[in-house]
Image (cartoon, rainbow, N blue to C red; front, side, top):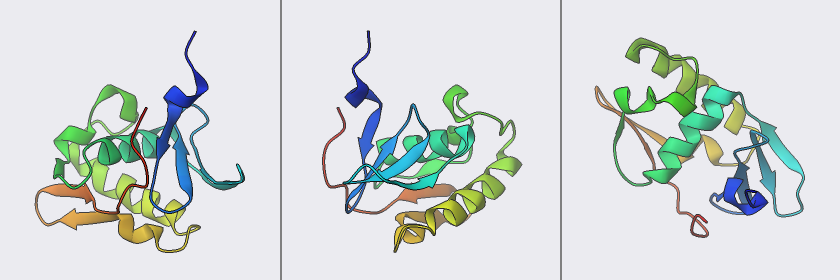
Length: 113
């Protein structure tokens, strides 16, 4: 049986990504924003490679979901940023690396389980 904390990825500030529920929660456990499967998977991939380039092709992995071509990744990241806008400053967590991909650039407050 998997431990609930296995599905939690600390983010910057007071927020945690809950992979299983596909939500970002604050320290009180309140849902800050809900994500689609594809958005949650993309954010997970970016956070797991924080500070490093994640190419559009890298985001076409099985746990990310619907995007099947690199052309579909850009709209996915755009929609993810829109969802993140519910959290102050979170839209800047993801940096675009022109003609290459994306990087999660925010400081992480804890280490992944």
